[in-house]
Amino acid sequence: MIANGVSHRPDPEQAAPWVRTLRTTRRWFMRRTGLAGLLALLFGGGALRAAADGEAPGALADAFAGMFQDQYKRMSPDDVQAALGRIQRNALRDYDREIEVRADPPKPNTVYGYAINLSKCKGYRKCVDACVAENNQSRDPAIEYIRVLEMDLGSLDLHGGDHHYNPDLVPREGKFYIPMQCVQCDNPPCVKSCPVEATWKEPDGIVVTDYDWCIGCRACMVACPYWARRFNWNDPVLPSDKINPVTHILGNRPRPKGVVEKCTNCIQRVRRDREPACMEACPTGARIFGNLLDPESELRYVLEHKQVFRLKEEAGCEPKFWYFFD
Ligand code: SF4
Image (cartoon, rainbow, N blue to C red; front, side, top):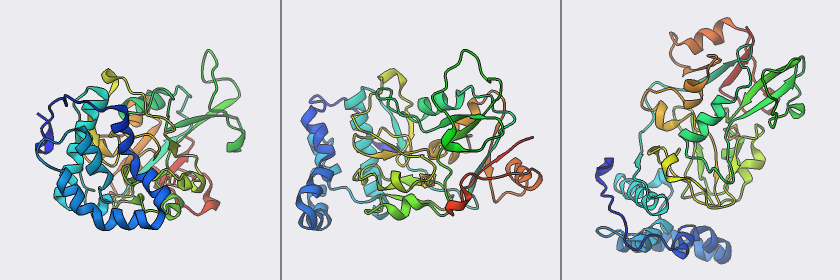
């Protein structure tokens, strides 16, 4: 039994390749029909969606209803429940795996922030592996939200950093390591660049994406100064036994081909009072995540007592992500 009262029986018709293609047809449709198509989706979608959202819908009905699904922030609670059900059924069809998709809202009085002690980071990249496993990232082509840059000691030239480093042992003499991921900007240029409002900043500071609304134009990737967004060029390859079945609709739910994805600080975990997977996996304790509004948090202690700095301050994005050396 899966949460949200959605039933999950295997669909006998499964998802034929053309039905899977139909799920991303909103992008195809809008590219070819322009304003007329947009108006049809906006004003004709409700009736068609209601017709398709019947009892125990099949793969085709789900694909059709998904095509006319509204942007997440405009959905009613019933619309959200229907969308969660569709994602769960599609995961069963595509990956033969039952998953739970939640829509946990932001917690009150909470704005998340992150700090990394670069003196402790040894370049093991355990955070990268944990992130891939937790967030259901495609294994082929491999998509990774975290890049760990191997840097020359004494340099902070990020463009000179190497994230493909592969020595027998780390850390290497004369090097240090900087993990980079989405810094959840307080003034996020990716949000401003999105022409369809598929990405936005939540009240807890997490910058999220509606993966069913993204049209894959990649403007956000160009706008992001932190190289934090990744494009799904192909249908993600995700082995059934590797799927993390605990997901959030704005986070690690399986994503379709043709959308831009990113780190959400593990929204599916932190909104349930768990640490991000990267922090949990770090063997050296270099990562400190917490609530910026909590004066008793370790994060606030670090910000008030260490010489912290942020990357690319000149870009004006106000990242909620700090670094320091001990
Ligand atoms: Fe957006 Fe990039 Fe900032 Fe993340 S780091 S919020 S993707 S601009």
